[in-house]
Length: 123
Image (cartoon, rainbow, N blue to C red):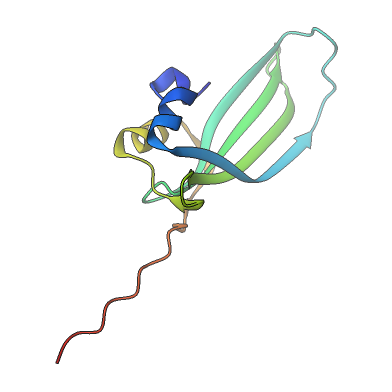
């Protein structure tokens, strides 16, 4: 929903032939949430590479009193669906991440894009 509300629904991702891919999830539980209990879910950026090829987002589940019930941190990147490799997102998609609130422990991540070796120079 984060992507869709900022102009990147699944159809746009398909058109661009890219998609977000989660590579690791860490889920922590702190309090019980009852069936049909009202909750609040927040999302914030926990990490981002300069080119946007890697990201970490954190969602927190709070009860209506503001007490933390659960925390999920997902680390991922953007996958080129044709070549099945991680890529940098288009600038307007990267802007969605850059505009997000950041966690207190936000960190700059390394890029997932491997540098292309320089071609030998002709002497």
